[in-house]
Image (cartoon, rainbow, N blue to C red):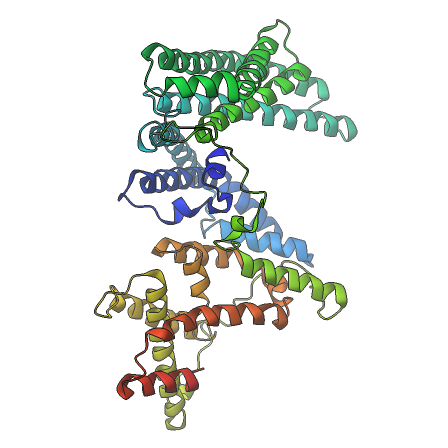
Length: 504
């Protein structure tokens, strides 16, 4: 969160993931983050696959399923990815995969946080960040926050289980509150020792970093001293070191640790890690890079002036459609959906009548669809290429053959599914306008559409009035390339005019 606030645009959370490449150190962070996310997602899938298969099989044979159960069945079936084997050998393979992924995830997680520290310590080169200890500090703070968060989640879960166990107990099946309390105390006693050790290590590194700056007396020390001991004294020494480190350390170190004492201590530990990163990231903006004066930092999530939104409000089209839909529901102009989720209908897949389509009377319609689809794709691709800045000076677009080949396969697949033509759409301009530049953007959108299959009733409830305005804005964005048409040359102006006029 401090890093996102430092960027002054918190909504750009996933931009670094959508554009991972090795052309710069910061862009390469997207590769590291995507790799770690993939490992975690794969580990969770192997860990919970048997539960997903069990729920899917249980709901499959249940007659008269409710809409919620139908949606749950569809979701579990999709998440199994077709792997329904629950034999002992398959489960052993799942456990082996979990161990391998967990073993790979630990060093990747350390590298991820260390790489973030490297960006601050070396790449960004701010006086408050530029230290050799910064990567190690970020790693240790991540370990502390990870252990504390796991302990906090475990304790809260066990407290909830104790309440449920006292209310509805099944003799011989459910554990008693006393048994849960015993397990809880054992885990708390064991993990608190590790947390205290890592907390000491992390605090020592942070203090060593402070001593290193003062001892080396770098040229920026004069202004850093005023920032650390003056401007940000409360944030650093009161909130971070005292409230976020010293107080929870004492609470955890006092003999006879209890759950009631551990929970606030863990919350303070997480607060201390947050304040450490806040002071590193946000504190680095307390002074100018030339050390000539101080600067005031204001949260970008609070619009202090119209200039805050000079680049436009991200997600404005979606926000507008949601707001219009809610107004339509409230005024009775549109009916709310009877159900939010429903199982997807795959009954039309493969229902083809190829011989009917080959009749001579339909050849004209087939040819018309081909021409319209081709020119629609070409116009969309060229306009998007121009909008994204990928058009070459000679008017060519790199990778055009691959675009047309992919679009052709998509059109064939749409026909096989008995759906409308699957092609590139003008709405892609909104994605390009939001910053999408790589193929991973399209893959992400496709995965989100796949997950939204069960939300079809909610999408169908959106009235046409809510989407019409958004389409007009997108069309306006696409019309911006008309200014590049040379209307003095009839050879290019007339075809362009006819395409604008005739192509739907």
